[in-house]
Image (cartoon, rainbow, N blue to C red; front, side):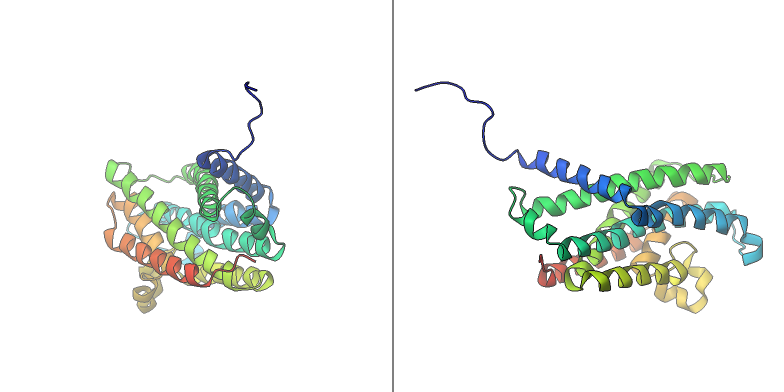
Length: 257
């Protein structure tokens, strides 16, 4: 007996499954009020608050405050999504057995991780567009050149790599409730003292240490791109190092259930 039978059973091609997973992950993140607060609302409030309150905060730089603060808040947005939001979401997916069930689907674990990373990049595009518009309304005048855009794109990609590896490390090793508390605590500590929003030079002697943190390296790399139009190779190397360390540690400790 010959003939064509439709629909044909079988799994979809891997790229199509990864894109479908990425779309679903991005929608779930953007529909979650708490995640949206961390990803968009807090960075916007920080940007407006620091620029409007610069005189009261005693901020004085060689460049206008908005030109220094906006790149830092762009870096903060990358941190909030690729670390805090990813860690919390993945931690609760482990708790409710979602990761275990997805492991039994045609989507391989490497495809699941690729979908999560693609979703992070989609959400970050939305964040960066919103913050760029707000920065422009506040008077942000960035350097726009090929080197500046290259430095910014590399900083976003390597920053996402570093913080996503650390977020998955935390989510794969701790209980969901502990991940929720720890991820929010680390976010607040890095926001206040991680040299991400303000330059490392604003922290005095601690700035030399903060510049080696992933938050400090990401903030400095984005500031160098938009303030001076340069690629901050040292800071990019720091982010790459954190990403490699986080990935190796995650591969050894991550538990899917």
